[in-house]
Image (spheres, rainbow, N blue to C red):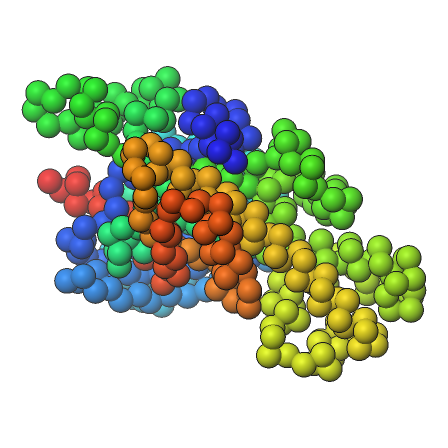
Length: 440
Ligand code: BGC
């Protein structure tokens, strides 16, 4: 992971993409006003109105599901659907006539050349809408809004969910400079010293940065040494050059082959909610075929992809649940077994989720130790903003994650701060920071 992070900072096209976010500061509490936040990251789209006032905020929202045929249809259909949802939300809030500044949280890898523009590098998490990769997703949304011709928006920021999470947690704790998602997908962002993002210079990023931030006569070198920028690591791509082969099992290989993006996002496929259930199913299938489980009966249910959702993993692993209850969850899933079978299934779930938490912990240890070394510190004390169902709802994931970071980065004191409304509040905060800068 550490090597991957360093390589991605130097050049484009690496497995860990290290995407510049053009977010230079965490919030300072002076953010004011009303903002829209739009959040596309999984099976839902959320439209939100966020109002900041004297270090407090209020948030109103509506959730819209994205039908599978739209997730996997054309880009135009997807963005038309988003515009329709925003229109409904503005109607509902009585804001259709107001042109509000908006932050767009789009939780997929985007190559940004400024805060309000970014081309989609690839889809992840089961999305595969056509004609989007290589396109500017902000322009696609603006065009869809224009086609609808019913309302207008001022989209001022494109935001990854990790960055939104970091920003929303930094609003509560100024020591927060890392954002992490352990949910349907897996990813992390952190504040990196601008001088370390070598590839930015190649794309004129530094020039842009100096125009925006240098004061008076300050030299370029001095400006660069002080400044930071949040980098969206897209660490889910670790292993796409096969460097994780020692860790990857035949079960992982099966899950990868049957995914919509074989060979891609290999680290994400070991660590995120979208895939853990499938890994468990592959193990159970193998144990059953060998006659070690369910009396050797390979049922249609067991052969059905996607039956094991992360929420079942969380339930089965809960210590509060007696074995009989585990057995009844399995029965609800159509898997009839003995109490011994339940013990085995619970063991398998535990092994898969424990490995995921340890891998994320190792990744996070690499990041915090890098920050510590870059600053020449003997000890680093830092806060990590976290979001995602795996972190928040799984009974053991967060604990194993913490323990692993403790073991692998013993010179760092890491505080975990679960984010409150990360994507929405964070995107609105970034929109507020951008807006306030423009007004100055
Ligand atoms: C995406 C990231 C996102 C993460 C968490 C991954 O699949 O590539 O951009 O931050 O999921 O939602």
